[in-house]
Image: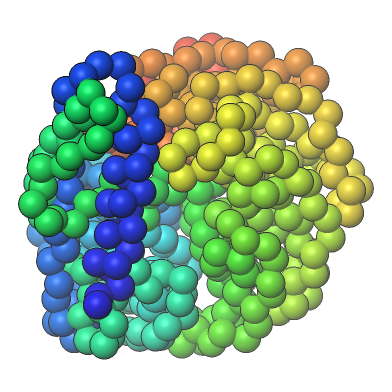
Length: 418
């Protein structure tokens, strides 16, 4: 049986049990939800089609990477939008790279690194509107084999959506009306889950699982930190893999350190020897989702619950990292459902889920104050640099000018077509 169908069948059963436990209020209660059937394509056909094509409407934005005047925006499990941001007040969606199974992106110079389910793909983006495939390294991310057919000849290219209704009778029995389909319950935390002018490696968001430092590409898997030598940029070589813990989610570089977020805690690694990361310290917490950023003295960790994150915590934790081997929690701040975050000087930017985009004054970490809040959008990740904050939200790509911190304002938006 195909792995995707097996996984989705499990999801179907779990979803029905969930509904069975929660629908208690009335007899003959109905609940609607969606189910999806996978569309498969041959792996060779998918690989041969990795190239720039006409721009597509953004539907499900995921992670982003910014370098020079370009924004590379992931379309969840579909590919990469290429956006010309020469004028942030009028960004232009220029092209699309068709790459099913893609959720992460990193760029060094003229080379873009991306995942295609289990594979690592290298693209030449010398001309971002006419990218060229350079290399595909197979089975680099084995934990992402959910999109691959057992015989490894095909991958999931797309999903066809259907709608269905669940009926609950007076005895508490649940009956679904999808006639044998494959159920796939969507979660805002399953996405794919920081543009320095002139920077050769650009900036990734805090939700990233790829990080580039000099001649090393670091990636995190479900329980490991992988080290790729990219001395020859077009030919990444896996040179090391370090076990961490289960549920690893994000990676954030700062100077000679890596801050890694996971379901069970934050992990600090020294990369004084870039090829051999060494774990220095850990901050444990309850099982929740956990992106992290840091500066010289403090780490800022957002903790949230949700379908993929369990737990009941929604907060910002501020840690003293003066002693890297023993981070100390010094303050907690309650939030709604925080996701990605960024920091520039004394301003702290947080995507607080359905509560919108929040900007805080963080000059005193013991007394962080809300300075500005933009509501009416459900936010996911943010990159703040040099007076410009780029925000990914459920309904589009927003940009805010904060060059005058007393007059922070939205200057553009590319809307999604959902």
